[in-house]
Amino acid sequence: MAKKEEILKILSSELRKILESARLDFELLQELRLRMMEPFIIIYDGEEFFVSKAGTLEKNAEEGYEVTPGDIKETLEYISSFSLYAYEDEIRQGFITVQGGHRIGLAGKVVSEQGKIKCVKHISFINIRMSHEKKGCGKEILPYIYNGNQICHTLIISPPGCGKTTLLRDLVRLVSNGCKEHPGISVGVVDERSEIGACYRGVPQNDIGMRTDVLDCCPKAEGMLMMIRSMSPAIIAVDEIGKREDIESLAYVMNCGCQMLATVHGSSIEDIKNKPVLRKLVEEKLFKRFVVLSGERRPGEIENIFDERGSVLYDKYVG
Image (cartoon, rainbow, N blue to C red):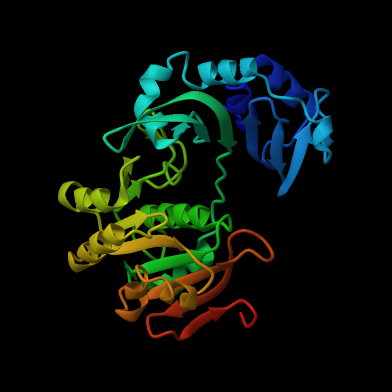
C-alpha cells in the first residue's frame, strides 16, 4: 500500500479531504500534529506549516484548520480499528505503530496506579510520524566498522532528529543481508520505541534484513539479555541508550562475545564524556568505533568516525 493511502485511511473524513486537497508529495511529509481545538500542523520537507480547510499550506496560524473533538475521536477509531481497548498496552507506552511502520504518538490524561501508568484517557493530542527508510545510507561507513568479517562495537552519536535511527536501521539491514565482501550475520534488534523495525502485528514494516530478529516494544536493558538467552545473535542493535541499566546490560552483552550497534543523543565524543552515565562508554573503550552525525547540511550526514583511542578514521572536511 502506498504511503499516502496508509496515512489517509487513519484520518478523520474531514482531515482526509483537506490533505487530499493539499496535493502533497507524501515522501516529503514528516509529521502531522493534531491538537484538539488548535490548528492542524504538518512538518513538510523540513518546514512547519498550518494547513487550511482548503488544503493550502500557510505560515499564519489563524489560517489553519481547527482540529475538532470529532476529528480526534474519528481518527482514534481508525487508528485502533474501532477498538482502543485492544491497544491498551501500546497506549500505556504513548504510541501505536500502524501499517507501513508509521508511529502514532498519543497524549492525554494519564491514570497511574502504584506509581505505574495504568492507562491514558481523554486523548486530545495525536502526533503522526511518517516512516522513512533511506536504503543505502549506511554503505559509506561499512568499511570503517568492519574488522575482517566481524562488526566492531559501534556507537552512533547524533543530536535529536539528525538521522541516527535511519542510519542504524540501514546498518542492520546491510549486515543482516550481507554482501559480496561480507557474509550476512544474525542480528537481534531490541526495538523499545518500535522505530527500527516498526512492527505492525508482529511483522516489521521496515526492511531490516533476512537474518534479523526483533523484540518489539521491549525495554532495552531487559531486551538485550533476552536476546542473548533466546536468539543467539552475533550482533545486537539498540536505539538511544542512556540509562544506567542500559549501560550495564550493554557491557554484559559485549562480555558474552556479541557485537553492539547502538545510538545515543549527543553532539560529540566530548559531549558523551560529560554525561556521568555515558562516560564509561568512552573511558573504558567499550566501543571500538564512534560515528558522529551532523545536522548542519542534511540528516544522516557523517561528520567524523573515530576509533576507541580517539584517532580520526574519517572527517567530512578531509574525506
